[in-house]
Length: 308
Image (cartoon, rainbow, N blue to C red; front, side, top):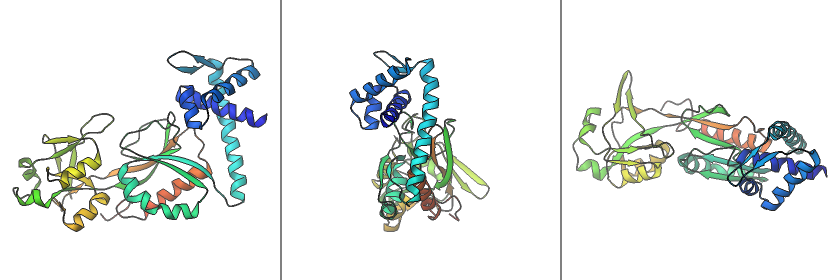
């Protein structure tokens, strides 16, 4: 009965967080009927109504909101207790669902994952790689690696690195275009612009050299809202664009891409690890977070402190 009560509490808390029985059932890996049954049993045992149910959404009652806060604290304590017992046997296990930008995933995390799996064979990773800013609570994400400033007050933010960029173009494009020796020369070239996929807001690049700065504000020939597509556009000879140095490195070495104005540097993007205030940072999430942070810190292309 105690285990069933805990499962019912987990089901109820997920419903409150995601706003529907179906989404809660999916994130918990349970049938919707099971989740519904748990909540009905919980309401019957407590003798109160926990949720308002309509055809469009589910929300907590006043009593339900109060119960959610206390239940979440209890579940966090239970998770911490279980983690401490498991850690006493030097075993960390469970699922970690994490979201991160595509370049971080493909150029940093994935190549190093064999090392993580060897150290923590009982941790099962569920990795999402996207340019979209996900709702961690609603989508049941344990933690995320994010680029840019993090202003969400519901998230705990831990700075772990920087994404460094370079201005580049294909050798074919540059060989048939006017010479570029200073930032103003960019005005007579095709420029590939980037828009954030969630907001649609254009990203304005700033070049810096010592105390000098230059904002690239010319109208782009093409707008793209995906970093991989922008890099592909550069490789295809569509114009001058920017890419993460880690992602462009192989193409720069092969000569398929050429860095434009190499003595000018683009501003880097801060990288942070974030997780919800309402989520206890379990042992399994903590070891992944520490591993990812150390991995980034040891790579000059990603580290916060770098001569680059």
